[in-house]
Image 1 (cartoon, rainbow, N blue to C red):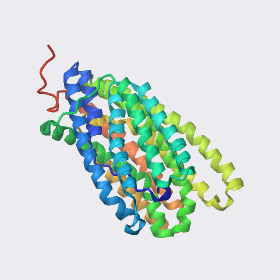
Image 2: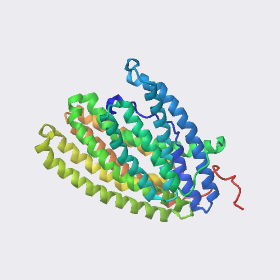
Image 3: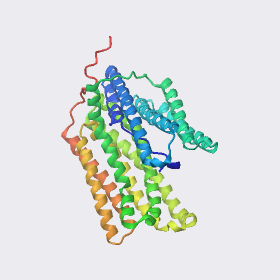
Image 4: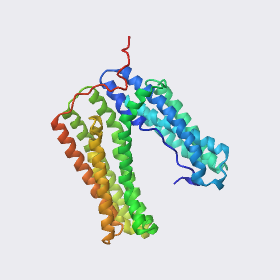
Amino acid sequence: MGRDHAPAPVRLALGIPNGAGREIPRALGRGDPDAAAHTEDIASGGILATGLLASVAALVVAPIAVGQDAGLRASTLLLLALAVLLQQAFVLEQVLFRSRLRFRPASVQLAVQGAAAPVVGITLLLAGWGLDGLLLARVAVLVVALAMAGRTLARLPRPRWDPVGLRALIAVGLPLLAAGILLVLLITVDRWIVLALLGREALGVYGLVGFAASSLLLVPIMISQQYYPRLAFARGEGHDAATLLRMARGQGLLAAMLTGLAALFVAAAAWFGIPIALPAYREAIGPILVVLVGMVAYSSGSAYGNLLNLWDRQRYHLAIQAVVLVTAVALGVGLVLLGWGIMGPAVGTASAMVAYALLLHLVVGWIGTKGVPTDRPTSIGSDVPAAP
């Protein structure tokens, strides 16, 4: 839901950043910087092409989304198209930073665009620029962030159009993109159940539950962004399954501890703050506490999905996600029909998250005991000649 009915950004990256985020550190771990550079170039060319397609799609979709009678100006559509293209480039640059374990400049880039965009946008909005001002702020801040990143990247990519390599990169990245989409569905399906079975008023109360869950989800995501490239690098170096499992357990323990601390803070705020500040939302307190348990459990197993991806066992990850998503829906709907109210979807989501962590732990442990083949080059950069 954007302010002033701003159309949502169109994304058509086809999993290219996801694939690059796995293959670049793997190649570096193997001691093959040429293959890593080749993958960066292919990813850049692919993002340029898909970004242009996404921009065109935004131009077509925006008038339909806001209504033909909204009278969107040409300047608004142009700024929207630029914002979509630049956002694609921004996401790729974040991947390039992390793939080479350059986390500090990645954080600086995020901080610049995250802090500056609201300030510039609100300033232009107050100056009477309206939607154009918000979009112009987004474009300007992205340009500055991208320019800063261009000076601090370990290597500036040279966009390359390589259909064969791009198909290989998409083949790697699409399952990772699908896993991300399924996770979003899992974390939001409870709200759809509340809306469909209990109505808008109940959804308004349940909105606090969704806000709490989404806020906690940021903790394991941020930790994963730090650990995943290191896992991929270690995989490329040829480390065995036991070593990678130890790294994943370390990530899960850290994520669970930090998420647990954040959950305690959120629980205290809900328990003591809602009755005072938002008494009409008292009914949300119980579901919030239940969902927090599920989020902590999910955090403890969040690293194991990364291992399945690195071991080329993405189908197991997607299958687990599909099972727990069905579980969340079935349990949430069933409990609502039994009269549990908004507590029903909360219990369904929390139970699914606990099951998600347990299944990931069991499946990864089982695969690890069977033995994982040593890392080998993929077709993405395998034909790159050795550096002279």
